[in-house]
Length: 282
Image: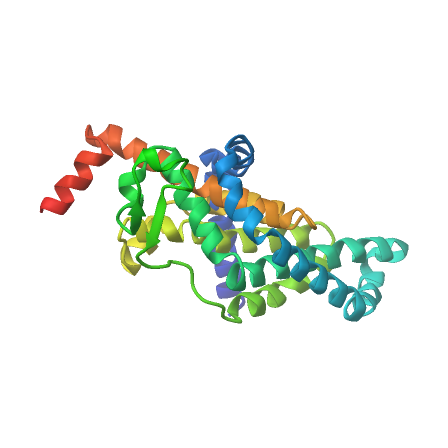
């Protein structure tokens, strides 16, 4: 039995090592930074964020107040055994991180779902991938205005409605933060591995991927999605600014999707428009 446990642990460690190497080599962790730059330089993409800014900040303030009122003292007591006198400071940072994460989970589920879809689709349109977006929503001609103004009615929505699973999973991983440095790193890695593929849920829908195709696509790029997810999670954990980074990360995911499409175009030797017309004709 002991040998079996050791072998399993060895296999998991090797799998984690391979994923980490693939993540570093992929370079996908750069996309969240590119997303910030692209978002800032394209004012039209600000519209969905500005429309949802006030209610999201109000939600964030309420969650942060609640977390400090009811969770600060219990957590500082537990962290005292691992962090000693600096527990008071580290707990403040932990509660701010928790509050930011909970704000992101709830706001994405209840407040900004449509705004994130518009940001993703608008970025694709700005990158010349309107034919891809047209598979799931109306896209007006360029004379209609900027990339957001060109977005028409949605055919369907890709993001799952609110379920408690995300929050439950988050609190299951939360005790890892009580382990200095290593625990926090593992926590972020696990969160990133889960959220990375979720950033492309809209892309998978636009590509008409079923569950099997989506799982295969993600499995072949596990390291890339983990690297993207970790970078995104770290940004969204920043207190107050997390809502801004939620939109820039969505922009980043769309930029990555556009690069994938353009790489496929070069490999196929055909334009997106011709590929789309061929699929409709078949």
